[in-house]
Structure formats: C-alpha cells, structure tokens
Image (cartoon, rainbow, N blue to C red; front, side, top):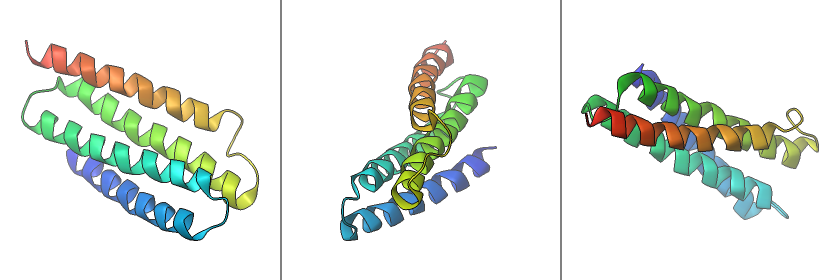
Length: 119
C-alpha cells in the first residue's frame, strides 16, 4: 500500500509540474496554476504521511485512509479545474468542492492519526 501511495504521489508531482508549465505559457490559465499548486502540495503531504506511517508515528488505518483521501481529493480538484480550462465544462457538478472537502477531511484524519499514533 505504501508503495502505491509513493507511486501516486510521484504521478501527482509530475502532473503538478506539467500543469505549472501549462499555466506559465497559457493565456488566462489561473485554473491550471491552482490545480498545479494543489497537486504539488498534496503530493508532498502524501510523502510525509507515508514516512510517518513507515516510522509508526501515525495510526496505520487512519493514516492510510487520510493519504488516499489526499490522492482522491487532489485528483478531483485538479481534474475538474483542468477539464474546465481545456474542455469548458466540469468533471461533474461540485467536483472541485467535493475534492476540496475530501482534502480537508484528510487533514483532520492525519491530525487524528497522529494523536492516536502517539499513544
């Protein structure tokens, strides 16, 4: 599971860099810049969660759920913004807010996993 999360974090990082380049060279590409920032930030958060899980500093089950929540939430958020930029329509109604909400809940879960993991 941890290797899968590492691979997903790498893909998110690569997609974030690609979107940052597209935002830098495109006209009115503020959506791409936001999507890039979310992917790059949460790829790093996944790497941190995997490291804490491997060291036993996070509760295993909660930490894994939170890490996968980062993946799914960031992909929903970035995917929706990217599709809006290039195709002119949404992934599905409320995709970006759903992804954002999932990322917030994942941050809360990481905090809970850290508290539970210390005991």
